[in-house]
Length: 393
Image 1: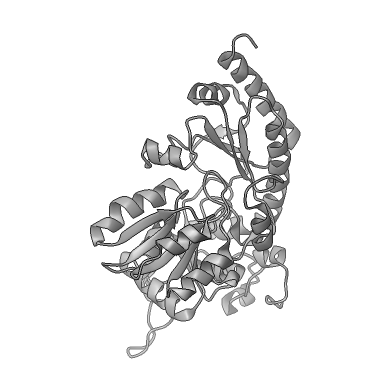
Image 2 (image 1 turned 180 degrees about the horizontal axis):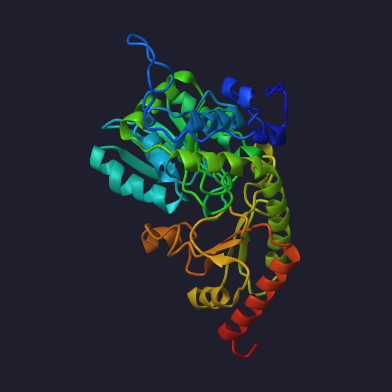
């Protein structure tokens, strides 16, 4: 099969088959439960010696994500934050990183509480404002970090424009592509240097593993990141690698249905009198929608919406039936989250509110339930929350 001409739906499922699998006819990659590998030569080692440095099962996953993201080298980590923090270890003392204001709370925590211990400086900036980005770049800025659409307010960054600024200032660009996945967005093709994923989310799709992935645009950067991964040892285990390979096979059909449902739900919420604001790139008035359509092939399955206050959000959560109320997103089941105490709990209250993460904000990752059931459930929960919030209603 010619992998280079196939559409992404085909690439998600099929891969290059090893000589061993050709002999057995296995359609699934073997799980190599081995920490070490016999070397047949005293002077020359084979491709695998110790599973921290490389494992055949994990290698299939890493080759797969590199192919899907159209990069050169892929890396599988034990979590999304392991991938993100390892990428930041490409920096050195005295370097400066420019990072989007509305970033995942775990990334915020790492930037503010860990990188600073190594003498690495940072500036948060509104990356919907190219002038603000340009003015924030310093002589020692080495990385510009993007997240688009951002978590949880789905703000859009113009990837190509930021890449142009970074190249003019000799900076690397990192981009968290968790929400879009390579099914909808390929940042490396727009000039980004490192693309990152919490593969726990859509790529896995079943709330059963923790995993992180990284892909580099060029070989030299890949060698550097590979050295860091091997040194830190934050690699993805073999069984989790196998499960993630299996999850990726169904990404296309899962993300298509969830995104179609998310569009209908966003439209419904936007017309509900108790909902103050809806954040979803598929809405015609969403800021940055035109930019998003230029750089992505879909709107995704995550949306956020604002209720009047914490009490309204609490009442809604307590009456909704179908979505699970939990940390995370991107699964077959719909997941409702409260960013204030979940994804962005590490961010101080004043910083959250400045970014629009108010006490009434809820995030919904739309799963594979029937959309009519989801809308009926959301409707009854909103009605009950509205009665509690406004007794005269």
